[in-house]
Image (cartoon, rainbow, N blue to C red; front, top):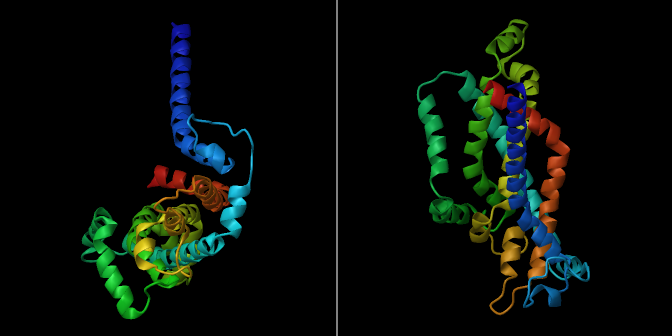
Length: 281
């Protein structure tokens, strides 16, 4: 009886591992395919038969997209816009989510429902109003205007996620700090924020990824190289009679590198924050 239970448990574990590996392989295959394509010469990419492993490895696609195009400027624009968006969401979203979590005021539930409704509508519905607004205030085709546009749909996500982390912190800790003479903002900065730092990092990473990969707003609200981001730059490389698969794949791989580096830096804090939110939230 015991042996049969142990055998079934092992089979169950093996099936779980097999399912997890299948999902990982399915998700990683496009990235691996893009990497292999970026290492092929153009003559080996478009062939009659599929060639998975390149016969001759070359880095000419990376050299071409980095030196013969404005891709470095596009990457720099994306970095500036993403950093600006994260700073705005962290400053405003942290204060807003803390206020919603700690204060009981009329319309509190309706406000959170409004944030949720904002995320339910497709982003394309607010493109035209945002375009008119940005043009009227002189922020059209600017990195600041693009960051503010990103904030319209990323800030509600930030507030929703951070509210759960603030709810997980007992309010008695702040009350004890206030008894000792700390102000409300002082108690939040010195007591609460260190406890939710992992959740703050995790939420900021999600916001950064959303801003880094955004395409629709960047396409509609930017018209010059000085403010375009890398997704728009890659799309504009596709011509009517030309499709540079090698350069596009190299650009995609280059754009993945900052995300991988960011995950490597904040991995521990991010996992700790997500775990705390799942257990306590």
